[in-house]
Image (cartoon, rainbow, N blue to C red; front, side):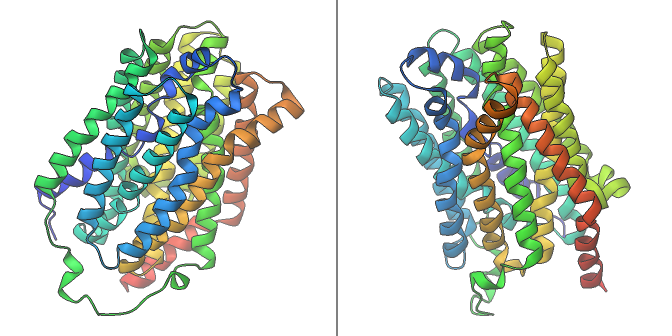
Length: 395
């Protein structure tokens, strides 16, 4: 089947909000300065709590997607992202308000991210799907790159102005409302089969979920510390942090556009390769004493992220029944959310125990963990074995 341009615009515009939980990353250093009595773990909760609340969204979406259209769920998510994102612009005198709103944004963004793979599976053929996943990740990068740059510049004078960036979620709501069909392709036979979440929980899906947990732990070592690294190394302020983070998304954008071609060459080790690239990027950042090195490390971090998040959801779509894809994504998203939430605790504990307490030390810890997982993925040959199932289905 040939997917219409209108549907592509609707799906890919929603993808641009996938990393909306990280929009305060460029001004995290400024927020820490605004709340000097709060510890670094409390400040980083602004980013990490969204990963925890994303668990709620994952399972809610997994259940309600069996009876409510994916379009409706995505629209609700984009509207909520706009509303909860704008509240801290008006009420920002207490850190707890920022954390609560971040948690609510985590739920609303989770509504979007958990239905996008299902929408792609609905409207793209198997032959188109892997390329579509790569393009979807590219639009994640485009959106994040634009929003991070906007957030950093809006917050350069007054940090809370960064929250105005969430107006963009309202624009995406309007685009998706116009472009996405009001009926689902599966609506023609709603009582075809009955499924439960137990049909999704199998060994291969759980392994993908474990990899997602590990990837979010190491990737959030970048997200949670890049602004602090820029500040501690005297490389600039929130505007520079926004620029560096934006260039990470440029790496994701370029990589996402190339995923279809790259997967034809190294498809059996794409996930392992994602961890390798992430580890190299964190190593570069750990030793970065100047802005060019920080930019290179950030670019590679975005590339590794694009590789992982194009491949993991794709594997979910071929390992579970089509109607259960949102549930499969719920399992993966839950693991991602737990990993993202625990990332500061895990990284900071290992950092203090073996390295120190600097942002560079956190990057080094993330590097070591990433390489360990990459070695495990290569030795187990997991992705190649999973891809064989796709070949069996096509026979």
